[in-house]
Image (cartoon, rainbow, N blue to C red; front, side, top):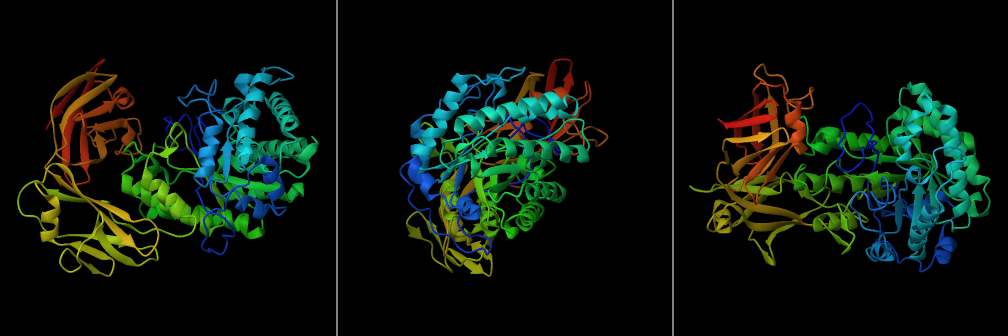
Length: 582
């Protein structure tokens, strides 16, 4: 990912990057027909064995790379490997990946902080040695590996329109040095020309020209560098690694002109933007978000996979941390399930973007969200069922009524509702009518117990295959907020959540116009706010406050998944901020 802005869409900088627009995750094999997949086979034990087992057919070779993972924000971090909070990479990292069934790893590398900025643009040999050490560790574990030119894309390559000759010279020198260093590595090492290419102050026609020039030059340099580079798989991106049809067509034209069967197309995917960052009331993985995915993947399949050209979805995820609460847990898991299914259906190998222990804790090699790991692994062979929600909210006091949720079977059969190792009883605890699952009032009353605020019970909706869907039975009372004062560095609001969970925030001025950094929507990205359910506080962050008009009251409507709303007024006066509860 890059820090530069793309596609005229706002981007989150939290993960030290912004997104192109396409990706997915783990599956394998011949997927164009949508056949189910077996779990990954055992990995080869050495780089030599891996090289011997790389199929000559590029489609087969890339299929064997599934599933894949990104060593993100590490060798691509600026200025160095640990600058963005990750530890030094060790051999144990790749041992752990192999043990969990991963077959490949993408190792993004940013070169310019370790390279002279004038001709001949020499790369620091200490840095080159470190990159090679990390690559060799992964290869020794029998993993396929991809390396690239990463954040250089927006740091200096983006200036091609105003500094064409220098950019081309530096790009060529960079790849000449990389290609020479790695020319004798096994064919299980892939090389990607450039991450999320983008060009400032350029027309679409110029962008097409520039990217074609760089991709072609990369191809010529690697192919003529000797060793195993003569038939190594080379990965070429679309503009911004975007799945818009005109960018896919441009890449297809470039690949056709090279007359080289050992080429791989790459795109990225970070979901429909309003859902990806929870802005513009994009709280759920709804039909619009789903269509954005299915249409994009269908375009990629038709342009490349259907014509025998393998596709590596080099990054996928959301533009927020998967456990930040910006995107609700269940909605995130629906997206993860769907993106995996569509990748498998469309025959693409895909790599999860892991920025800084967002998915895998690199110290323990444990997943931060266990259900996500289960969904990823299950998707290698089947779908998993979900539901319209993963929360059943019950009032703190008064009678409890039956509640109904909608099952998303995804082609599977509903087989039961469980609490731990105990099945609930159909017709007594719940009923199923088509896709409507109704929990009875008696069952919910029992599950609620003393109705302490928060989770009272955890249920599992089980299907005939895949990962069970968790349902959290929660008791709640109406949330409330208190007056507060702060500064432009932030406003912390005392909040009694009372078991409720915040969904998003609408912010307006008195005339109804949007208040906040985004002028095009009254629903600002949810990352502007931070509900702390343990500390009973809600923080309105500095970026939001600093964007407010001085002296103009902004009305914030905090919306909760329970259906409750709390209205709150915020006024900035110089560096002082006042918050008033309605």
